[in-house]
Structures are given as structure tokens and as C-alpha cells.
Image (cartoon, rainbow over all chains, first blue to last red; front, side, top):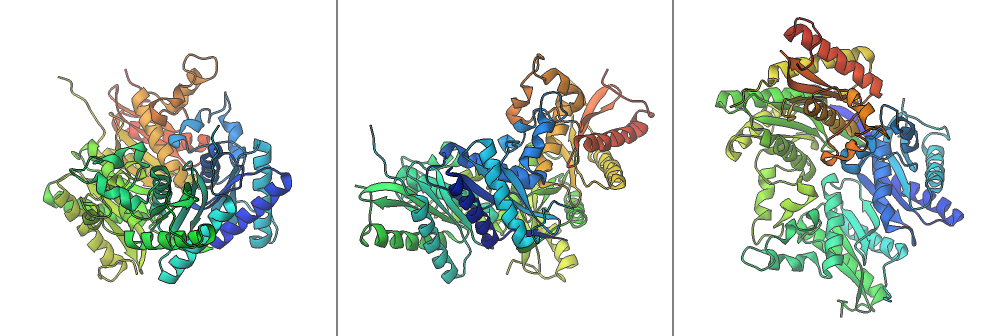
Length: 149
Length: 149
Length: 149
Length: 149
């Protein structure tokens, strides 16, 4: 048997609260999703004014970051024209994205889930996700940036 | 032009909090979704222990209740063999369900959204959704059961 | 954080070996799938002669049994005409099935995965799945039938 | 009438065993899929620690290699911007991929199936697939690299 650690609802909603605080400070309403280590949705919030179009995108960003075990932003370069991963976005029935805004949540070297943010520009989405991950790391990793081992 | 009233994130999370309180009292962890009047997800919570399998089902119940403007439970009879709606569950790519647990949220006669609950038995799911709708009506409709006009 | 136990590849392939032995003794080639507690595929074997048509069905049976935390066979009655779950088969993009042949794998009260079998009659599929689960329980649960707590 | 030769389960599991040995030596857990000459799954193994995200991708690589009758890596150049196959990744509902890691299995000039590997970098995936195909050729083609005639 394998033992796995997954984010729980309390930790997930703390991530969403941190992301919301950042998005509010920026004045950009956002869709914010948190999935667990298996890619399954744990918590979601659409701030008033966030695009309905981006609900599914936020969830997909979280799914892809949890699944690839890296920020969606870092998957992007390998999928550009000429790179070996070109066209990967068409996989998984459209649940593979390299749009910035998805970042894994890591505790003690293990991916326990991921956040996905979407409704602003990709830079704004990424900014909000990073702020939430920094707060998560302060709580769970003594403030160290945490990537899987 | 049309003016529409949609549930906002604050009201949606109050619905989720009420549903959570009821599910906790029953000892049955649940997936709880709230969608707006357009069927789009506003807020979601997977209580620790709720089935991953029922995440999508909770969202679908809310979608169907918002879209049909009636509780999913009440759609069921019309879709039985011999009834004119037989087979409707296959519509909308599987986003149409008659499983109990989805109920519209109504203010001043207008459907502003819906709740969907899934992970327990269908009776448990329905119970939680009803408790959350009753609390919603106390806040928004002076305690009267509210159905669209 | 939540801690979860998932079936590993060694235990999964032992389940497939047991199912294969039973199917061989019956003279019915089968598709045999094992998923983990999150519904994700761990191991799969198509015995020579098993129907290609039933590959996806075997995987779906395992997915549904893991997700519903009960044998697919036991979900069936609640989805018959007149019952509250009627039409549930259309949910989850077709990944919800009540066909016999999917059974959860349980260790110490927790669903750690599930087996799905398909290519014979539903009675043959169920027979093979049950034989594999009995062998699993001898290894992991001191031979006791194990259902989630 | 046509006579076709397909990989059987014994040969397929030998391919998976060889791929596993290579992946273990590299220290990179992998998802390994083998499909037959019709693109249908014959055997699958998720090594402990391989990404759930890459299960479907491994199967898709095998499907595409079997279907295109060439390594997925070699399909890539023709699908780049400006090339005639641009955008092909969007075909087949996302079951067409040019990511390295899918290679046909060929016996006496005929594609009898394919292997697909995914969870590492694309270079690691390709390395494992190539090692398994070399071992397959030693068994079935007297060690000669075998491509369809």
C-alpha cells in the first residue's frame, strides 16, 4: 500500500482566502480553485465579477499543476513550436494547460494539491497564485519555497 | 435589455456554511456546490471524507436545478419510462440529472442560483440541500418557501 | 492535511493475477482493471480473446466502484425506473456504471482502490471480481469480507 | 479477408517488464501502456510514484504510435507551425499526440502494437520506450531494428 498526503478543506480554504485577499488588493476579481494531490476539486470561489468563462480554466490550471507537479507556467516553454512537447495542450480532453496561474502546493516534498487562478491577465492570475502559495509555505513549510523532492 | 439577479459569493458561501452545518450534524461529509442563475459555479466545498466521485455530481445537481428552475427531485417523475421526458438524463452531455439533492435558490420569485449536494444517500443529499435552502429563505424571503413566480 | 492509503502496483498486479486465474479456470477471457482510491488507473490486463469493446467498461467499473465506495452491482437497484437514482448512468461523462463487475478493495476500513472486470456476461464478470477480492481480503484483511467503515 | 497479427498479453507484459527495468534503473517511475495493432489497450502499469496526470498520456502515446505506424516523436515535425500537419494534435478528440515516448512494435514488417511511456521528461519517456522496443526486437526480430515494410 502507498500512503499519500492530501490537502484538507481547512487548508484549501485558507489558500482561497489568501488568494482572494491578493486579488482584492489588485482590484481584479478572480476564479480560484484548489484541487488535491489526485487532481480532484476541494474548494472553489468565484469572486463577484470574475468571468464565468474562466471557472473551468481555473480548475484546469489547478488540475494540471497538481498532475504535472510543477507550475503550469513552467510547462509552457516545452510546448512551444519546435519543442518536444508541442501540442500537449490538446491532451487529456482539454484538461492540460500551460497558461500561467496554476501552482502545486507542496508539504515536506510531496505535492498535496494545487491552486489555479483565472479571470485576469495571465500575469495577474500568476501573481495571485504566487501570493497564495507564499502564504501556504509560511504556514506549512516555515516560509521556504517548497518544491517536490 | 434584461436585468438579472444572481447570487453573489457572500450569499453563496452562507449557503455552503449552512449545508456544511447540517451535514456535520448528520455525520455525513458532503460535496456542496452553488451555481448562479446561469448555471455557472460560484462556490464549492468538499468536506473531508466526501467522495471524489460525487464532486461532479454535486455540481451537476446544482446546474440542473438552476437550469430547470425546479428541484432535481421534481424532474424525476417526468423522465421515467412511459413519461414524455424519458431519457432526458442523456441530454446536455450528462449535465442533466434528476437525482435528489439539487434545489433552486429563489429571491422575489426569481431563480438566482441553486445548490447541489452529493456524497451521501440521495435522501441525505436532499436533506442537506433542503436545510440550506430553508436557511436561505429565512435570510432572503422572510422564511417563506420561495418558488419562482 | 489528510492522509490516504492507496493500493500500490505490487498489490494491484496480485489482484489482476488472481482475477486472471479465475477467468482462465472459467474459460472466459477478461479485461481486468485496477484503480486507486482516487479512481486513477494503476494496472490493466486484457487477456487474449477479451473484447476490445469492454476495455473501457472494465476501467469504468473500477472507477465507479472506487468512487461510490460500493460494488457497482449494489448501485444498480437505486437507479432503476421509479427509484431516486434513475438515470444516474448518464452522469460523469459516462464514467458512472451500475453493471456488475466492479468492487472496491478495502484495507482497515478504507477504500484503497477497486477492481473492474468486463468481457463476459455480467454474472461472469462479477464472479471474477469477487474471486479476486476474496484473495485480496485473505492477504490484507485476514480473510474477512472488508467494507469501508 | 484480411489476416492481422496483434501483440498478445504475454508479449505485451514482457514489453512492460523491460520498460519497468529501464525506468527503475533510471530512478524515474513511469506509466507504461501497450496497445495492439488496432490501438486498443492490452496492458498497463503505473509504477509507484508515477504521475496520475500521465496515465492517459501514456495510453495516448501508444495509441498514436500504433495508429500512425511511426514513433510519436517522428510525427512532431510535420505538425509544427508552417508544416502541412499543423494542428493535428487537436484531432481524434485529443487522442493524437506527437510527444516523444510512443513507438510501434513491429514483427515481420507489420505493426502488431505500440508502447507508450509517460511521467518523466519527454527525453526520459523516449529512453524507456526505446529500451523496451530494443528488447522486443531481440526477441522477435533477431535484434534488428524493425520498421513496418
